[in-house]
Amino acid sequence: MLQTAESDRLGPNLRALRQERGLTLDRLAGMSELTRGYLSLVERGLKTPSITALLRVARALDVNIAQLFDLNAAPNVRYTLQRAGDHDTTDRSFGLTPLAPGRASKMMEPFLMRPAHSPGAIGGPRWAHGGEEMIFVVSGRVAVKLGGEEILMGRGDCLYFSGEERHEVRSLGEEQAEVLVVIAAAAG
Image (tube, rainbow, N blue to C red; front, side, top):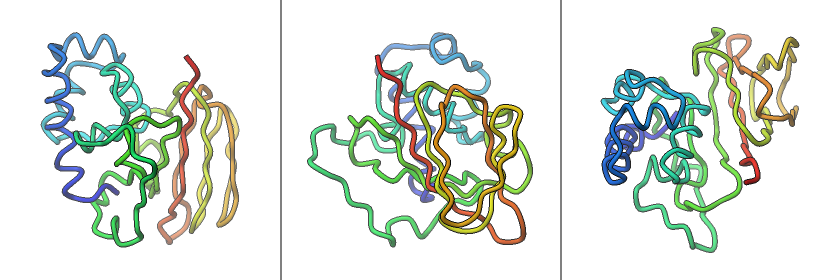
């Protein structure tokens, strides 16, 4: 659910950051534990990465996820403010809107996510990443697969868990769900 302009910049920004650091696709693939082919597809705008993939790439490039979307993200601003109208025009295929892209150095990564209805549609296999995660259902209903358990959640429900546990979120029912996802980076 990135703004179209933002989703169009992800691939070129990733390529620019990689090249700025003198990394080949093969080297970045090894550092991020993703495949060269996958990264190539992301750079060319042919593949939309999961949150886990974004976290891995950002960590490998030593940047904040915000910098993947905005190369001018400022690490020292006092605050960022994103108004409701700032993310109305969206790319539905991605399903993810970063909520604080203007601030590069932060301990949390907040997103609005519109999960797909089918299992595995966002991110392929279930996600796992360092740190902790919170999911708050803004609207609709979702099913969260967490480890071997499926947890059904509705508007106003909140789930907090270790990001290292494999998890997947999908919309239930006819209404497209919208959830607030906040990922806190692992210490160290």
